[in-house]
Length: 293
Image 1: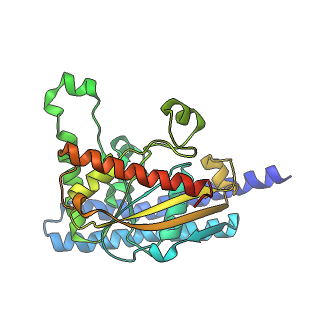
Image 2: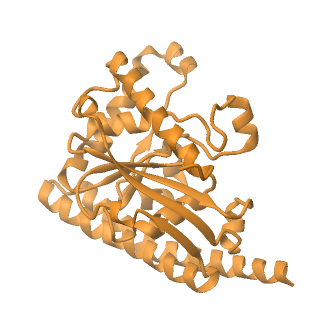
């Protein structure tokens, strides 16, 4: 009986989420297209803020049905570390697609909307892709070593495209978000990486380094550590309400001055130091997940 009820909740959840997405995308996409062709920066910024408010409404609507259907219990430690204004980068461990919804839930209208780094191919996802584009999500286009060897002209092109994507972030407060592990945690990935951490994959500093190098107003990092009580981690499990209990620890970490306003993309010695610094954050995060801190 419980299984049937959970799956009915899942069906209702996905229906409401789909309707919410379609309805608000009908506003987001046309406004995004208008903004794209506007020649005056100040008007572009006004349009951007209005579009972001629609995005916040999408998140707020999701919070309502999640609260009604899933009756979630989020134990949040460090709420005071959520910055209501300013420029920050943020990161978190990554266990499930549900992480995104949880992070949006606890930061909705409390800090500048999270701007998640996304793979460029996601822009082609019907409706959602253009909505993300309208919300100024940064899309990453990576080239493989084989592609670069075949076409040397592609060298440095990904950085140039990212500079173009992030250049307007200095015009209004943002939170640039990067899942440092680069992918969701699974036991298989953990074993393949030979990860030194018990509950985490090895962190990749690239997204954080890119944001720091290209958005010079950033001076702090908001670090989220998420621990779901349930071992069921699929997005369907989330929609069915099986992931309705979690502990979230939020920390504001001052970024060492030597990494601020520097070119972490090309300065390899400094990039190596930054990588070590990010790794030290992961050591502490692993201890938190083990309950040792």
